[in-house]
Length: 146
Image (cartoon, rainbow, N blue to C red; front, side, top):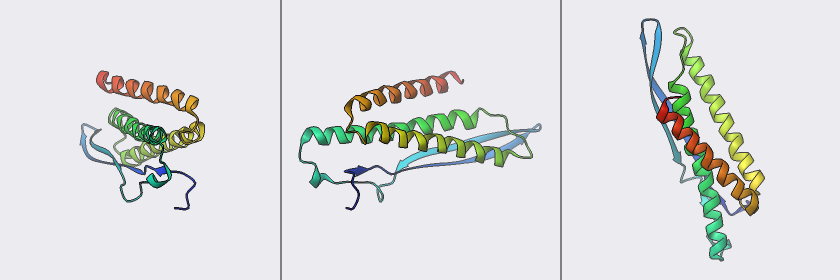
C-alpha cells in the first residue's frame, strides 16, 4: 500500500545441476527454471479504473516476465556450453550464474527506469523492440547451439 507504483511482478530464477566427470572433463545436466512469486507480486486494481491504463500496466509487467524468460534461455545456453575445470567447476558455474543474474537484474532496473515504469510510452515501445529482438536472438542461439 505504501508503494508509489501500481504493480510489482516478483520473479525467481533457480538452477541446479548434476555433474559427471568423464576423461578429465566435466559434463553437467542443468535444471533451470523461472517462476513468478505470487506471494510477493501484487497489483492495485482499485487505483486503476481506466481500461487503457490497466492494459498498459499489464503490458509493462509482461515485459518484466519476458526479460526473465530471456534470462532462462541465456542461462541455459551459457551454463551448458562451457568447458569447466574438474578441480574448480562448482565455483566456475556459481560465478557464471551470478554474472547472468546480475546482468538481468540490471536489465530489469533499466527497463523500469527508462520506461518510467511503463508510463513513458515512447520508451516502452523501444524496450518492447529490445526485448523481442533479444528473445529471438536467444531462441536462435539455442536452436543453433551457438
